[in-house]
Image 1: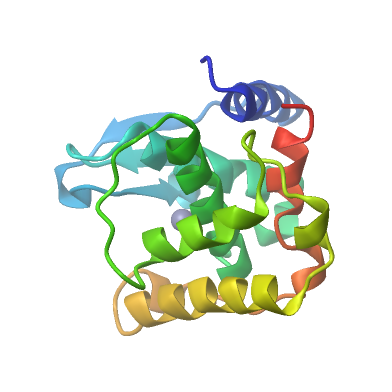
Image 2: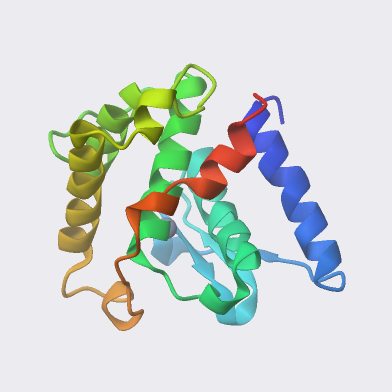
Length: 180
Ligand SMILES: [Zn+2]
């Protein structure tokens, strides 16, 4: 994997799985997932649709990294973790020059807007860590768009998404990209 943060994520996952006693994640193709994918925590698997992208796989792997980092949250699908995983996967696409459909106010577009607070290697700049008003506003836009997008749909409504403090937003994303 040539992508710096992607490679660090891969290696950290190898370590987390060893620490968990040699647990393995199952990878499954699942036509019902379409262009998306899902981290199927109860079955320790990632299910990927036939039209999904590499960044989708990265997104779901990142969810497992979040879960191993905080075992109490395993499978909890908290909203801020979802925002972090989306920003992580779209930053990956930006770095790898993916051509993206630009749909105004989509989660995808909002993540690109937020990426103005990141440098070319996916690191958050000092300004973003200052939590200035514009950054917070962009973050909240993504959070609200995700909440609206999944409102009334399965599986998210049954997963108890919660709001968390903004202060630790993107902690793990910074962790996998800080030396890139
Ligand atoms: Zn997700």
